[in-house]
Image 1 (cartoon, rainbow, N blue to C red):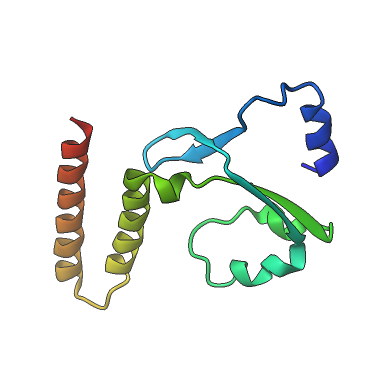
Image 2: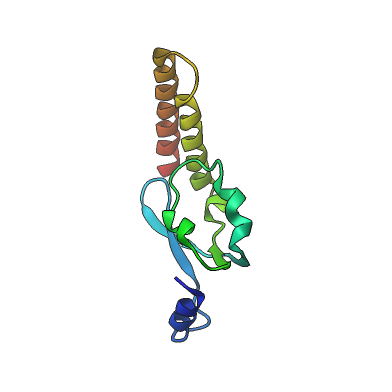
Length: 125
């Protein structure tokens, strides 16, 4: 999407309407409130792409404009459960990549999953 496309879409929108977006909350796709924006040169982002684990939107690497406009949310920072879920995935990944034997690694990952499920059960009731 180009800024011109966003401006055209916004022409017919109530200026008092809240801006929301989509997010994966660790369990399902849901919505989030958008909190901030920034405008920068695309070249300023390259260092953020190196060493970033997980999936990336390959379309980022096809951007030809010099500048980009970002709309972001603080949802995964402010929501303690979403933040805990994100950290849990990181911990699982580290456990799976550890140098432990497969048996020890399996036991550790199973323990982590059991703890996560027990905590999730406590917070959802």
